[in-house]
Image (cartoon, rainbow, N blue to C red):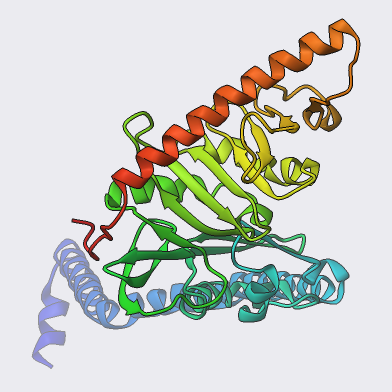
Length: 366
């Protein structure tokens, strides 16, 4: 009641100012209240709207990625299936390289890879087969297996095979290609291996074995014994005893190059005898003296590489019957050459008897 009376007593201007001030106060109070409420209500609502928008959009992008990934995976699986069903996914060939003493069949028996095996499956067998080869075949030093996508399997090996038996103090010790002498001795050699005598120096033995390994298997299989018969004239003379009954004299530096022609020389000989490969290549019957020699074979395959095998096997015969003057002169020159070789061989044999009569080496080569 008092407020109404006071309002009535106010002048129109005072009443206007009072109402105006009241309006301003109500506006300020409404703004302040709205601001307080807005901090708790309006802003979280906006964030929620943004989050809901993101949540709505994200499944769209994720769905496209999943579809692309699934399609790619299905395509890869289809290609793999087609490849595995095709013949190109199978092992086609298995080749063995580097073997000489070890038979190919023995190597193939020890590996698990077989023809028509699936190529991806063989990749998991490579390391196991390599270790198995070295373990099961002591004559192998190293083995590598590679499988191509075209189905070609290559087995590359390096050998360290037993080449023979070296004699030390009347005992036989197996010796490998790299010159390693076994510590286990035997009173008799095992198998069909040759025997190596008088190799006192291990370095000479290693050098000989490295060259001996180069000989064809056909020649190696025909060697029964090798003596290192060093002389004053020839420090590195070798005396081979062959299984076919022939004897061969050669030199350490050149025997590997010349003895690969031994099968041809042996085939051209009418009787078993001596083959001299020290200077050139000569053969003559055993026990035949210089004066009574009636025939000899002279071939030098290393100097006649471009000639045919027939020219290497030409026989120079000296017969008692008279021939033309040109034939007599050529025959006499060949006899002189053979006589010189025979004299050299006899001198060598005499010196060998005085040089290597008794001693056999110890296992350490000292």
